[in-house]
Length: 168
Image 1: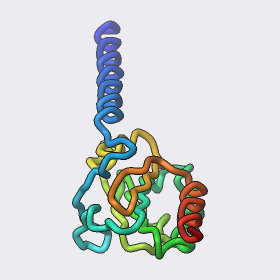
Image 2 (image 1 turned 90 degrees about the vertical axis):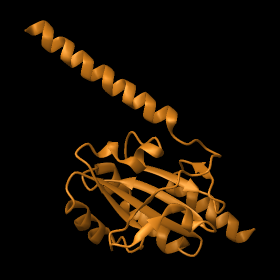
Image 3 (image 1 turned 180 degrees about the horizontal axis):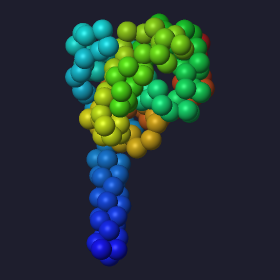
Image 4 (image 1 turned 45 degrees about the vertical axis):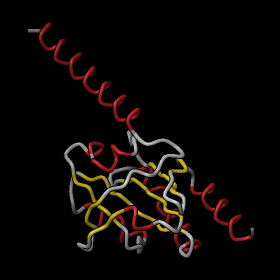
């Protein structure tokens, strides 16, 4: 019986490793068109990422259960307030429970309209997260006005880029 449980554990570990590698290597890369997706926003309206071309887009994956995500929330809100005329923020909350995200969003002042909640028993199995190779959160992706994936940036890097584009 002990040997059987060892094989089961080994099988789970190998399966997780294969899934992780598949997610990482099948995701879009810097310079590619940002993977498009359609979903429903928290207010019930339909949303398609490609409809946002023309401005920079910050696609931010987070979770109400994620300590580092909560720590970054004030920076995200400050970035939105400072650059909302140049930058559209799209947040994707990866949640097991559909009610948890709202408390955090209200607490920190997530006022932008493009908020998505993906509920999944295994949160990183979200279809949207897999398209971007998200294997941990927080994860941020900056998308150019032309719809190309610019890569993962920090809030400071995004602020600098947008501030430079105003002065140039």
